[in-house]
Length: 601
Image 1 (cartoon, rainbow, N blue to C red):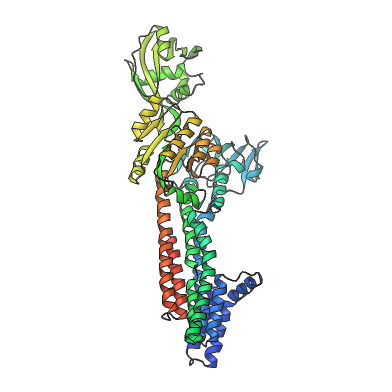
Image 2 (image 1 turned 90 degrees about the vertical axis):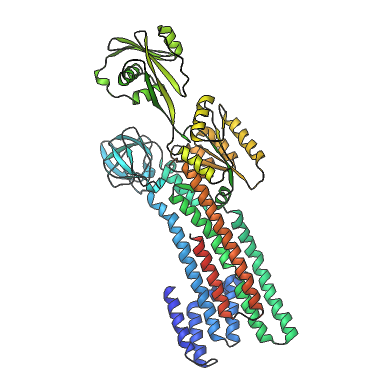
C-alpha cells in the first residue's frame, strides 16, 4: 500500500505539469486514480451487488467519478489518494494498538518438560496432569501453575503483573504460568491443568474483552447506520432543489459531491472503538484485565468502592505480628511456643512455626491437643502450654487480660505464665495507599464487607482508612449490602464497585455494578464472576484502573465532539461552495488522523 501511495502521488504530480483539460492531465490523473483506487471501486461494486450502497467506498467512488465527469481530473485522483492515505494511517494505528494486546500471546509457553519415570519428556502443556512434576530451567517461561518442590530462584512476573521487580520463590511457594525463571533450576508440582492456568485465564479474558461494547461504542454503530442514509439524501436534495432553482446543475453537482465526501463518519466510527481498544490494551500491560469496553466505561463512573478483607486488603495468611514476653527473651518464648505447636495442624500453629527455625536441638514429647483451648507438650523436659485463657486457667498460670487485635496465644512453662504471641492477618503494604488514592480520585465512600470478627475488621478498617466497616457477614448479607449501596446512590450513572477474591465473593462480584477479582490468589469462581481482574492482587490497581478508565472516557468524548463539530462546519462551507473536493477529503482524513492519534494517547 505504501508503494502504491507513492506511485499514485508521483503520477498525480506529473499530471499537474500539463495544462488543465489536456489529454495528458487526464491520462496521468486516471493512472493515479486506478493505481490507488481500484480496491475502492471493487468494494463499492461488491456492495452494489449486495444492495449495500451507503458506505464510505460508495461515497468516495461517486465523488471521484463525479469529479472526472466535471473535468476536475486532479481532484478526482486526489479524492482517492487522500482517502487511501487515511485508510493506511488508520490501519497502522489499529495494528499498533492491537500489538499491545496480541503480544500477550507470547506469555503462553508451547512446551513443558515433565519428569516421568525418572526421565525428562518434552510435551505440550495440555498433556500434563495435576500432580506431575515439571522442570523449568533458567530463562524458560513456566508453562503451568504449580508449587515449587525443589530449588530456589527469582521469577520475572512482568508479563502477568506489570511488576518489574523479580519475585523470589522457594520450596512450598506458588509459581504461576507465564513467569520467567531467571536463575536456579526449579521443579514444580502442577496444581492446575493448562486450560485453568493463570496465563490461559488472562488470554481468554483479553481475547473476549473487545466483544463487549460500551454504550458510546454502540451509539456510534447505530449513529453510522442512520447518519449515512441521511447525508446521502441531503446531498441528493441539495443537488435537485438548488439545480432546479438556479439551473446551474454542474456547480451544484460539485457541491453535492463535496458534501458527500465531507459527510463520511470515518473519524467517529474508527476512533471511538480504537480508544476503548487502546484503554483495554494499556490496562492489560499494567496487570489489569477489563472484560470489555462497557466495563471500562462503567469503571469511569465508580462512586463507591467496597472491599472484602481477607486476601483483598490483607494477605490472607496468619503471621506473628507481636511477641510480649514477661521475663524471658523473645527468642526463647517463640522457641517454646513453636515447639509446643510442632504437630498441630491449625493455621495459627503454622504461623507460629514459620516464625521459628531450630528444631534439631529440641526434644519434644507427650504432645496433646485440647479442643477449643490449645496444646500441651514437653519441650526439653519442661511442660509447655500454648493456648487461650481457659488453658492458662487449667494450668494454674496467672494470665493477664489482653485487649489486642488478632489471635492471642498465651504461653505457660511448668505452670508459670511467661507471655503471649499476637497472630494476625497482615495488611497488604499498598492497602492504605490504595484507599488514599481512591479518595483523591473523588470516590464518595469506601466500604469494607467481611465475614471476619468485628473487632479484627474494625481495627484493619481504621488502619487502612475505609469509611465504613461491616463485619461478620454471610455471603447473602454481603449481597444485601451491595443492594443497599445501589439504592443509596444519587443516580444510575454512579457505579458501585466491589473487590474480592474468594469463592464466597462470587455472588457479590456478580451483584455489584463492577466486580473486581484478585487474579493470583482469587478463586476461579471469583475471577469468572468479576468484570475486572487484578493479576497481581495489588489493591492500588483499583485506583489505577479507575484513572485509566476516566482518561479513556475523556478521549472518547473529545473525539466525538471534535469530529462532529468539524464535520458540521466543513459540510456547511462545502454546501455553499467554499470548500473544493480535494480539501473536503483532506479535512476528512485530517480529522480522522487527529482522532486516531488522540485515541492512541
